Length: 283
Image 1: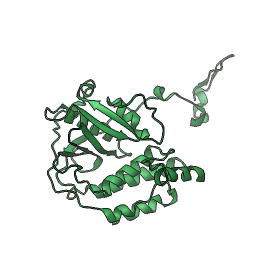
Image 2: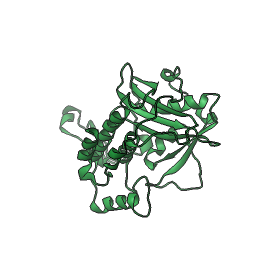
Image 3: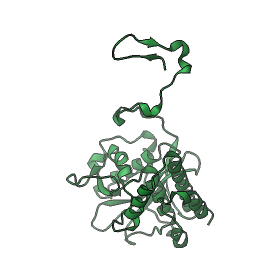
Image 4: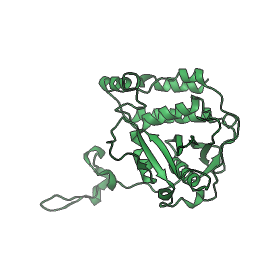
């Protein structure tokens, strides 16, 4: 703290003893739009996945899930009532993908494990599917994974996307891959995604628009977003991804991980998350 500036009266300089004073973070309320964003980016490259299993994607996604789960446990705690509401949302009459009180860490944990342990065969076997990964340049250190697929007489569908919470830039890289895919002449003019509320900002900043603007988007609810070729071209892609060419996945279909998938516990059972993820990684 360098000085105190009251609304009335004389300023008090603290520069000579600045190290003795501080302001608690929670006492300062900033509008989210005013918060300064870290503009640094990591040295990330995009690659087409050629073999889902040989490239060890399930295990690496399990590790990303563990990072999301650990981040969530470190950053917040919940009341028994909130945990019960989230459980009801997931398992009760609502049957939603997210709980009303889920945050990005919750959705990240859930999506990473779904990607790792669900069967990723094409929704329509005769249609194309793109499996793309973001890695640290010159390595196979996974930063994120994207799966896009065709569905007959429909726009492209963004089926899965997840990034590593400890490495900035994975989501931006994968969304650049989405735009590159839309730029190709033989792909439809739009791509759709069903998103959790916590990912809304990331998508809209990249040019996605809420598909039905008449529907109120609420926390804990899924909603539809769409990106057109025209809108994708309005925001430039970072030059480091210009040379990337998305190619349809032609490798063997990923193996079924149904047994491990059945072991997955919902994040609502927060006391068990660390052990659960460790168990899955050790399968």
